[in-house]
Length: 288
Image (cartoon, rainbow, N blue to C red; front, side, top):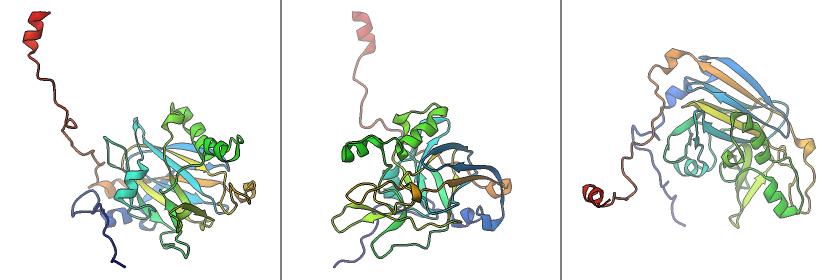
């Protein structure tokens, strides 16, 4: 067997991948440097959208029992910029935790939020290869349910997110691949995606720092804690495993952000290899 293969994308000193851990540690609850400005609850089998200003912190928390949440995120002022799950997998990892960043789509390509605290950071990899907070899979949706069962069912994370963002003028086409918060997943020996029962318990949370103005949306997964099969011969309604999720937003003391600046997009000045046509415009004008 060969040794460990190095990651394709590596941080160089001073690059945007080289996270200032001391700065983000100073924004956590333990540092005592913020105050709560908003508090929300996401009901079972439903979704919620909320705004977070650049420089604020938001927390997604377990309150009554284990529960998985499907998370989406957009630039508040330009929803064409949204979270890019696949690039985040490449730049960070397939299961994210403290100090990992969630990146936006092209041509923006910048950190939208940075994870600053995670009570499940010590979960690591379990005996079956499961890890938490995954970017491997995506949201459940009524289309794949129809594909697998031949039946229509309205309670899916995709549908929850569609309803949640409608008041902000967004549609089904804006809902995108998710961060599965608190979800335990991996790849089996056949390289197939698997899901396990959520290991989170009341009091567990994932906390993120908003690098830019955000519109966030969260679905309280109708699959609950995923301890019940959603498809296959043992599938049944997992309603009894469903619990609400909590969302809190915190304002950070201004002096803590004195040296911080919202990230900028890469200053690519090229034209993707395209060239303007070699045309003598004066000659064309004379012929018109």
